[in-house]
Each structure stands twice: as C-alpha cells, then as structure tokens.
Image 1: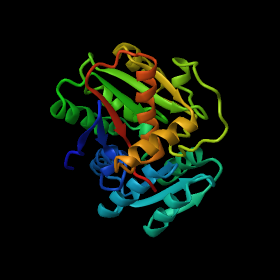
Image 2: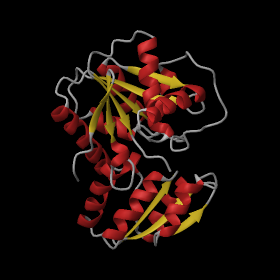
Image 3: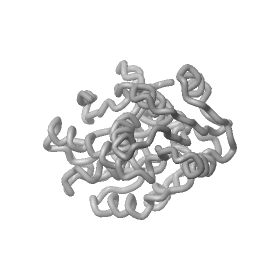
Image 4: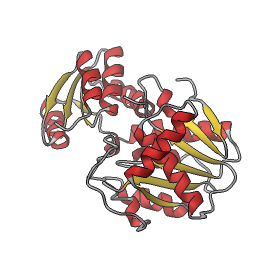
Length: 273
C-alpha cells in the first residue's frame, strides 16, 4: 500500500489515514491480518465491528476469496451498514457482537479478525509510525483518536522514544484517557460512533506506552469535536468526527500549554461516512 499523505495545516501536520483504500486506518492492520490468515491456511474469517474494521475486512476478504461473517450492533452507523450490505459477507445484528464473533470463530474454525487480540494487527499499525519517521524525521508528538487503543499501540512501537504520545477520547466513552485527564464533563451522546470500545485487552500496554513517551490522555467534549470539524472543513479537509476529535485534542494541548514540540502530528483515522 502506498504511503498516505502528510499535510501541514498552520502549526500541525495531519496524517491522512482517512485516504486509505477503504477510507480508514483499519486497512493498515487488515492487510497484515489477511496475510497471516492465509499463511495459517484459514478459508473463513469473522469480525465484530462498529463499522470501519468490517468495511475493511469485507473488502480485503473479497479480494482474497475469504468467506467473511460480520457481527454488528443494532446501533451501527447507517451509512456504514449500507456499505457493508453492498458486499458479499454474511451480516448478523446482535446486542453482543464481540462474544458472538468469538463463539463463531471457535465453532467454525474461522480466523478472528479482532484487531485488539491479533498481534498481526499491531504490525500493520507500526507501518504508520515508520512512514512518519521518513516523512517528518523531527516529529515531536502525535495525537491519536482511540477506541480499543490498538492503533495507538502499534504506532508507538515504531516511533522514537522522544515522541510524546497523546491518546484522545470522547467524554462519552473515555476508559483510557480519563486515567490522565479529569478536565471534562461526562456526556451521554457519543457522536464518534467508531470509538465505543468498552473491553480493552491492551489497556495496561497502552497506558505504559503513553506514560513512557511523556505524553498523556485527553478527553474531548462533543462541542469541541464539532468545532474542530468546522475548522478542518473550512480548510477543505473532510474527515470523520474521530479525526476531528484528534484535532480537537491537539487544540486542547495547545490551550493547556502542554509540551508538544514544534512538529506535532494528528492522525485522521477515517473518512466521513
């Protein structure tokens, strides 16, 4: 896969992972997961997803003639669900997509494409860090919107220890960032539907990666996300609310006088759906 663009907007750099083949950073991991699946001789795969990972899995499984079964929540974003229905994967709607996908995997000998429990996914996300080193050797900090935190952990594993890592989560669901940031008001509406993970298998590793880098977690309000999206749109950058939230995290770091250095990078993880 070709490198995604790194563009500069005023005093920050934006890594356009939203311009991956299926429109999200999930492609980075999925390519390596499918490669590992094939090496192990699997012919079928299963995934639980809020949307982007399933869209990526559906695309790459189709290309590699792998039968895919998808479990999604009834709360899945309609636009993402409509995209999934266009492909040939079998889709099940359930209140427990994660547990159902695990059961399916065991019963049907299907490769589980859950990125937070698949080491090959981390290898894929390391590619983002490697690209950033080549594109911006002086990178000083990075802002990553996180759900399970797998993307952040993979990126951190290929960056120099001098790069400060900032984990950005919404006030409606911030099981990791609230460990670092208490400057927020809890919210019930989650407008960043791709970041709804509750079970975090990699939590301790992610927290260590953030601490060891000298970075922190940041919790962002919905109004801050929407304001950040407006700024990006005015600059002709149409990205997901998750990407806008990462940009809002950068803005909060500036406001709080955090030491982010002269070469900060914001990861835009997904496109608008």
